[in-house]
Length: 461
Ligand SMILES: Cc1cc2nc3c(=O)[nH]c(=O)nc-3n(C[C@H](O)[C@H](O)[C@H](O)COP(=O)(O)OP(=O)(O)OC[C@H]3O[C@@H](n4cnc5c(N)ncnc54)[C@H](O)[C@@H]3O)c2cc1C
Image (tube, rainbow, N blue to C red; front, top):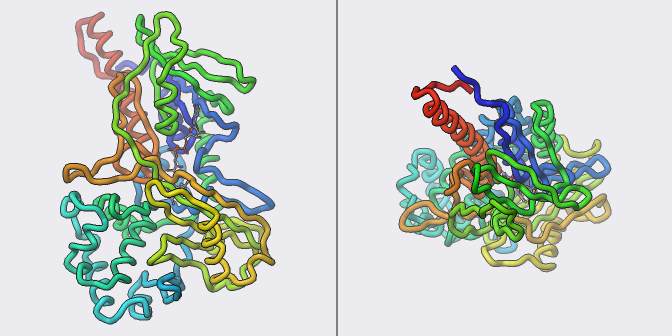
């Protein structure tokens, strides 16, 4: 048995959840890994801002307990901890009223949002949700699904709106006319079967653990270093990464394999090579256009909650989200409160002051007098939640890229890669792309050994 050569050098470009976890997995396989991260602080959109003892994620973040990310994190030695959202007493925003949000049998029976027949329709729909097969809805958008489902199609606007709201909550996508019903079904089933948790200390819990383990495993972390170009040598098929170091000096480094873990527009940009060195050629990865899923988020830190009972609310006829994350997870100093609010944007919609005002009005309704208790607030006007919108094309799930590229030795990872969603897409594709790269090196070694010895050898890594 032959071990994979330790000399195989890999560059991971981008240090968010995808890049950090891919780098760690590759280092665990004995490869020499260099991770390039543009920002001084790795973590990307999973970073947590800590201010005066308040731990603010970039907008509301919930970790899917049954998602593709968790088993991979466990393999890497990380088990995120936290608690489920505080949905015990939740409210809906519908036609300027705030009835109970029906999320359980008890609250379905209690709510005035739905009439008696709609309550039965909802209970029947929820009872069979877990048994609906993906291929039953794969050719439909969420809008088409809701309009054709046997329990929902004759329902009121409030019932249909509730299902669209839950699809929006679990996918973050505000575009029900484009969002794939299959994608929504998968997320709804994940949410119902195993739920989500808010992480103690915010998502920094995951980022910090990944970074620490990367450093322990010998990953070279080049934070504050922006990759500007990526090309391939025509002579030996190695890759040249050109980057700007912290002093903004351009530097080249050569690698045997590449994991692209930066956003797709950055990938496109670094492949447009302006300064090709002699003997270098540009790369052609392939892949269709992607659509970003965006939201406007308001993060609010208070010394105390004026109305501690109002911990969770969702809009039914408006794309609104409100949750007191500190009611579940440890995120604030004693008595303090951290509330995340969001407005889901449609494709092409741009957030404005009006949306910020609407989120503040939501605060006025649920936490009157909150301004007197304000410590910090942050408005993220047009933040990209995910770099793909899973849609339907020719009756099938579409709108994503694969880990494989046209270039041997180059793989991609991120929330725009593969069919998992949100952070599970980043982590799921990080596992797959890093394993594909290891398999690629094994294959290369096998080919060269076969040429030398005429034998095919089993490799252990
Ligand atoms: C408001 C909001 C709410 C969310 N809620 C949830 C949720 O509830 N559940 C969930 O699962 N997910 C959620 N997500 C999604 C989740 O945060 C992301 O899917 C995940 O963090 C993306 O990780 P990534 O590594 O793929 O990308 P990123 O975090 O974007 O990382 C890419 C990294 O590449 C770096 N980079 C860019 N250009 C270069 C360059 N030229 N050279 C070097 N480095 C470069 C960037 O600085 C960045 O650090 C949410 C996201 C947002 C914004």
